[in-house]
Image (cartoon, helix red, strand yellow):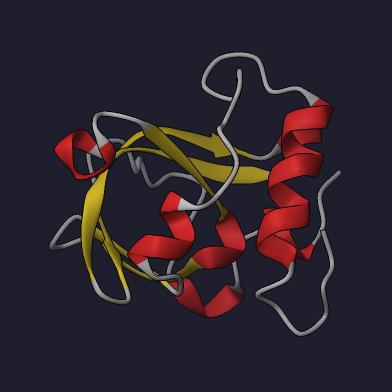
Length: 121
């Protein structure tokens, strides 16, 4: 299921040896939390699980790799091209933290794909 939505864009600065756990995540309109899990591909594609802390009452948000617009390894910060509200409105992540399921990825993919012109999940 590796498609454009579940892969990093070439220009963001991602490399396979970069450990993103603990990086702060910045939305277009402010910080949303920090990365607690980063899928590095395989059959599920690449995505980040972000602990949002008190911002949305300790929930986790899942962001497809395509949402990442820049990675600053020096500042340990990831900038995404979505607003806080768009991230908050995304479907619940289900079991993506430990055991990604195709249904969860399709549901999240359907939500996030509407933000990209090609609409590819």
